[in-house]
Structures are given as structure tokens and as C-alpha cells.
Length: 146
Image (cartoon, rainbow, N blue to C red):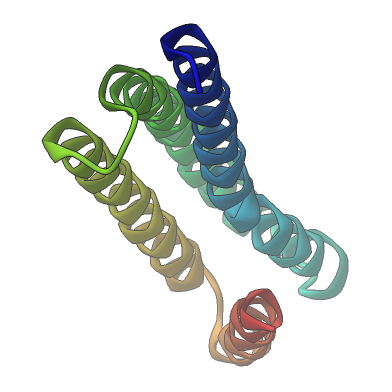
């Protein structure tokens, strides 16, 4: 195989790997949204929140939306750095390893803050509402694991 064909092949493999990394990162970042939507539907449709509870939850939601958006931007940036590392190294080298670790760190932060957000919402609920909420959280988390 000529060196130009080999270079073209490496470039194609790097591009496909980078694309796969970006797509995988997008899937991970988007996954919590499905559970959030289910939980928000529960909060608004089934729990019959009081006006005071609704005001508190709106504040919690606004604060989390800002933080979630920032973490999603961090995730996109981490995925770009991963793609660049794959393109530069054409294999599983130290830059790729470091970039993967960074994406895992950001995903972990998003997961932690999502759970903190859920617990902050739960505090606003009365005991009966909290029990329904707990069941819905478990159902949403186990549905994502299937």
C-alpha cells in the first residue's frame, strides 16, 4: 500500500472514530432529558402542586437549566477535544486517553448535578407527593438502564 493511500485510510479511520465519539457523547448528554421530561410530567400532571410549591420548583428549575446548559457546552467542547486527539494520534494514545477522561469527568458532573436537582425538587413535595416522585425516579432510572 502506498504511503498516500495509507495516510488516506488513517484519515478516514480517524474521522469515523471522531464522529463516533461525538455521537456517543451527544447520546450520553441527551439521556437525562428523557427522564427529566417524565419527572416533570409527573410533577405537573399528577402531583397537584400548590401555587407555593410551583413557585419553589420554578426557581429550582431555572437554576438547574442554567447549570445543565453550561455542562452540556462543556461536554460538546470535551467531545471536540476528543475528536482532535483522535485525529492527531490516529490511535489510542495519551491525548485520546486524557480526552476520554475529560468527557467522563463532565458526564459525571452532569449526573451529580442532575441528582442534586432531583433531590432539591423532592424537598418541596409533601410526603405523599414525595413517595410518588420516588417511584417515578426509580422507574425513569431503570428504564434508561434497559
